[in-house]
Length: 361
Ligand SMILES: C=C(CC[C@@H](C)[C@H]1CC[C@H]2C3=CC[C@H]4[C@H](C)[C@@H](O)CC[C@]4(C)[C@H]3CC[C@]12C)C(C)C
Ligand SMILES: C[S@@+](CC[C@H](N)C(=O)[O-])C[C@H]1O[C@@H](n2cnc3c(N)ncnc32)[C@H](O)[C@@H]1O
Image (cartoon, rainbow, N blue to C red; front, side):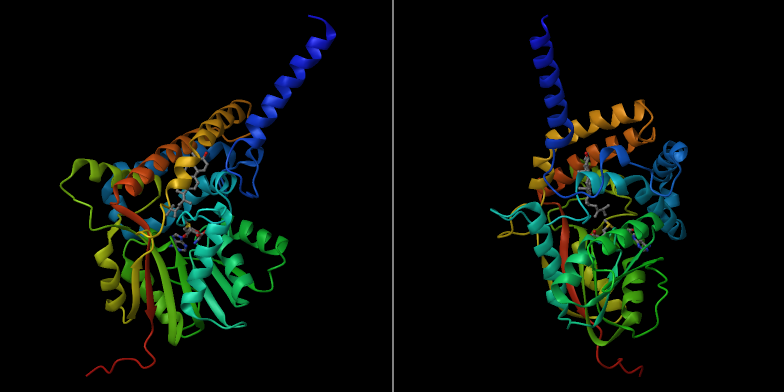
């Protein structure tokens, strides 16, 4: 081979590699690169053991029912997945309906802005983000409403990521992040002008417990909106395929059991909220939220090969391959849940804490 053809082959290979690693994949701003994948707050050598521990929860369903253990198990889950989510999805860890002509990023932002528009807050007011992740929604909401947002997450790795992103976005004066359990929040009674939760309260073993905490910290008369993960009216517990899909979603997303859409308002009323509005935002005329998952399939294969290579050469923690494989399968269960209509990640409920507490007679 002469030197010219050697050069051309080399250039072609390098170009192909660059395209495979850097171009192919979801065209979103990530904040994470494949070479920076970690196990969150878990040291690299313990990632695989923690992954095994995570799975063992599902092999012993009794443990999942032990509600006190759930926040720890959810914390382990987010140590394992946070970097992969940021790398492969972006800084907002939720779904949104597909909008023709809009990027995923814009569709995501509009879904987030809708939440704060619903709770009707004014600039300068203080609102709570229940289960804030690395703060994608918090930043969009603070920028859109100019309200002061306080986010809470159980995972300290996410707290650090969120604070770093807030600073980088120049929004740290409006956005504050606290590490804590949303089942026992470190906030005073009647101290927030509004609250929202986006695809986070599904991690609570009992929805009443988190709703009761939100109720406690809200000022009387103020509003709370939540986007809930639910099984819909199409779900049949006696259909083995339905059960397989829902259990697949629960295992791959650290859920102590998905709730039926009909349980949401009940839980809210039980703790004292008034129901202002309830609507499944996934229903037509909205377009499928799972289109994005389907469109990403080629990128997931590319990511999988990349993760295997990075783990083999010691750049990514060994257990990353297992975690990625789990997410790969989860994406399929979620897509099947969406296609069949038995599952929705955006059952919206808008609630008001009454102005006056009901009399106890
Ligand atoms: C609300 C929750 C999380 C919802 C979604 C943000 C995530 C659910 C499944 C995740 C993913 C699945 C496939 C991954 C892919 C194999 C990888 O290469 C890149 C990242 C994924 C696309 C990843 C991204 C985030 C999800 C879509 C739950 C936890 C309550
Ligand atoms: C799927 S993520 C959604 C994050 C964010 N709402 C978003 O849309 O980007 C769920 C979030 O809920 C948080 N979470 C789950 N259980 C929690 C608990 N008991 N206390 C506090 N946060 C919790 C997780 O740490 C994570 O940040």
